[in-house]
Length: 582
Image 1 (tube, rainbow, N blue to C red):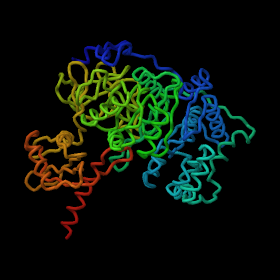
Image 2: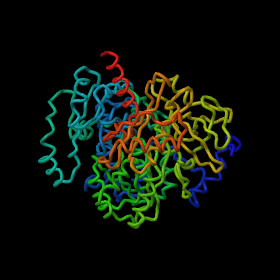
Image 3: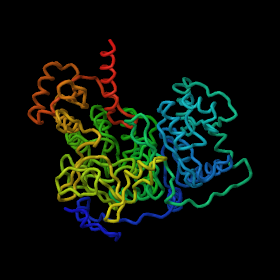
Image 4: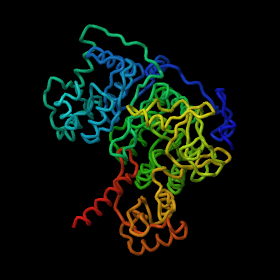
């Protein structure tokens, strides 16, 4: 299928494979032209008594939640935060994070979402890149911001607590167990405790009003996955998030009073876009889980029986390894979605089999997305095809081009994946050249996001991810795709996870090395090593077969759960440097 023959500037772009999702899912959906806050406020007016948030048993109705957001907005204005200012949030999945997220949007300020476990160096990079005036974090992470505060790199630091909105009994229990271990935050004229901040707007007397925000203005900064030393800031708009909300609502079939278990972090597009904003836009309940553990997740599943699950492949694998997972009922489940990394078919098959035996009528679906499109821009439809990432979701378009060109590739031919549609980012923050290289207007009239991912498309519009363009290895002059080698290794029954990198080689210039985690760590490694080499020779061209295999108990991951292959590359380079020095 030649995508360009289907494209026009008409909003009703014909895409026949969209029918694969389900009957009644339209190709194009109108996006509400308002701020994110405006859309949530609209929902609160329709369903004031419905539960918006459940936080460890503490519930906020939509009326209570929007009132808290409004109070936060007034406090921000009373402290002098104005439209166009930036505030960095470094928080887990707690109500404070959501209140501030929508409050900053209401006053047309920019919210910058960061991982609270980021190093002080990374956090300083985020604050500097976004020119943030304020930062908000937990008392647990105060030390990560202390130096920036004392050096005047931020004007104010708001300190929240995990226990701020816990139910009374859980709050008391938290203080006795974990709370007493958290160091006391010192008094400082520029440190504001959460309760002081929250009540300031009511107490200051003067009511400030911000202009109505522009849905297309840069409202949210999320950061790229973190496999590089300093992730890029990705500037997104209210329109981007609202588009995602209507798209995912159409696909998931969520209705008011449905629920989503928000284990994915609010500083990641998948968690923020699906588990929070989409859920709250339609009158659903977002169940906040501030800290991940398999035990906590499974107990939440048993207690709430949410209608939508979303996670990364390692989460689903961890759930299946816990005996208590068998106690969960999935009779109310409407959708289960995997993203953030490639979903190995074996995990999907086992997960589908397990939840079916526990009452589920749905299967785990894989999504493909980037932070540059908020999150998913393609999802497996009802008709599953193995190893496919699915088809573009409503309002989105995809095509495959010859890398670094506009030349479209025929069906089945590999090239760079390009995406167009209303969820595409506004820009890379402070990086005009990188933005220009990534967002390009083609002769078809559309602005396309050049993803940097290699893949292909079949004649029905199904997308297949092959590799990151930057992860192509050249071995004896031939291209080797690490992901392809990883998939072959992971298809062996002894292997749980694999990561492949290129290492310097005197003969081939670069050779393939694999890092492997075994299902059974007591297995004879030498015997398995020979089996895996033979398995690779059977399934791969000879240049792609690993020359070395190193067994590990685990593989390093980025802050969002992807395997951090760059860290393995750095380890190998350090080993080589040490040898040369000795």
